[in-house]
Image (tube, rainbow, N blue to C red):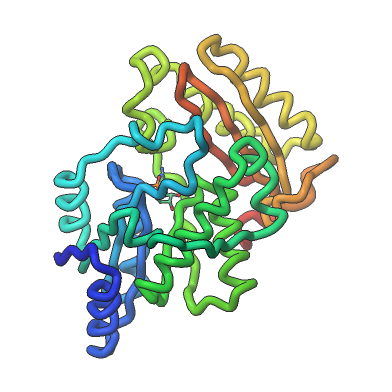
Length: 286
Ligand code: AMP
């Protein structure tokens, strides 16, 4: 497995793979890898000959009060995990490689970037779409895999690729969970043991909804069910429970007559956890 920090050398490597007739996929991460990230690589390898990954903690997607400097890192462990997963090469750029002096161009998916998480984290999705565009331009992937864990991010990336006619096929990977159901996240290590134990309430609440998926309930009733269940856990500080059209993220009212996504945003101590679940008829055709 090769590593590159120079963008021209990285691009030349991808092009040399393609010159050998190989298809190339990419998996973009901020490091501190877990089984979810490894799952993205395995999924990508189902569609392409070689997978190239990146590790870059992107400053432009962090708000002023967000903890960019404390983002956990483990480069040695990350490289070992990528190597074991069969990754061909890893791109490890420094911030000045991604944002050279005077870089003024940004990419924004209007609308979708301003709702839900985008409302509480202004500028976050613009930071994501800008860096993902740059990484796509450097890695020139045929396929990319993003996690459904970050549901809104995946919807935004899909729309950006469609709107800008980018030549990459975007695939989604279902949420990879710990044995007790907590969605894997690099942030989970920062939970106190008590909060870690309490955090299973999120997946439990989503399981409850799945259990009642075929009941004749309205979206408002599903939301109440989720809220009541999570509110039983005193350590859970509910920031948002949204139910939206799973395809467009538009508001959803009334009976569940098409796929809907339940989006949870809940704090445990200082740590904000997100989780989601798609329910409703036709969800398998999304
Ligand atoms: P991050 O390193 O957190 O920026 O995430 C990089 C990629 O991994 C994104 O596409 C995430 O959606 C995906 N990802 C993170 N956690 C999970 C998970 N538990 N299951 C599936 N994908 C995930």
